[in-house]
Length: 111
Image 1 (tube, rainbow, N blue to C red):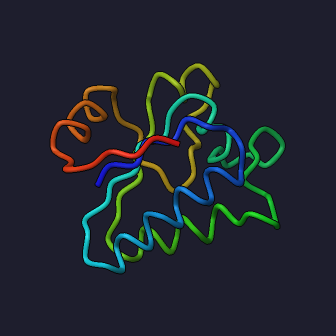
Image 2 (cartoon, helix red, strand yellow):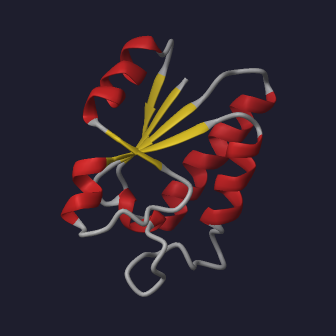
């Protein structure tokens, strides 16, 4: 399953990651690709990013997802537009990897 996250809202990102954890618990292989405003949620610098939310703990949800074998990728161009490479929990990659995720996934979900 491919999960594409572009929303910059912490609650939406949190729910997408929760879906990934749930799918993994059922034996599915899941890959998350983060782009656009969602990159802001994963920026390490809490002054710039929104990853310091206590109500929607993106860091914990990411750790749960990754520890179950998932991968989180982020768009290099989107990170560059934000003048950062400090995208927490994500491997910076290209739009071609997003294409590959969509092409190889049986299902792709967009948040």
